[in-house]
Length: 170
Ligand SMILES: Cc1ncc(COP(=O)(O)O)c(C=O)c1O
Image 1 (tube, rainbow, N blue to C red):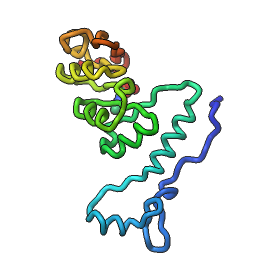
Image 2: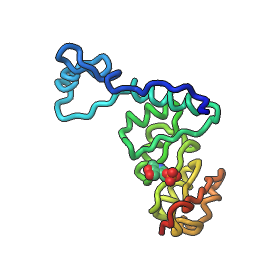
Image 3: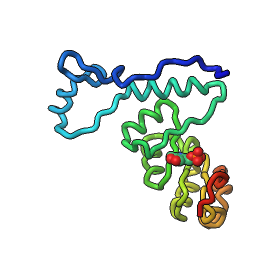
């Protein structure tokens, strides 16, 4: 049985709602934002992200996992900073995403690198940054591509995790 009691899903309308004819994002009228920044624009709710993250973390709290936000979902620095502040790590799939995660304040020991086509330069950068884990997901990414064993990243180890179990990726 699931140890976590079921809770109703979060609804978008909890954070984006009409008050009369006026759409609001949390407490702010969207028309005010449009006037301030011009259109088109993207709008996110920090309260919604925070609520979702806390509920997710709470559901797994007994296992005390490392929860990594998939940077490719939205690599906006303000969004990354928000999740970093909540204690999330980052799951990156490129050197650019690695840089953004570090710039947003995600500690390197909470970063893991996924993806099937990491270049030598990307593996080098991941080792230099001493991230927590490199998921080796294709044969060419194995020991040697980075010019050194991914298990030996200077002062601290990056954990290579082999991930070709379900797919033969080359
Ligand atoms: C950001 C990200 N990380 C990791 C993975 C790989 O997940 P898994 O280890 O379950 O194959 C994916 C797969 O789509 C992904 O998009």
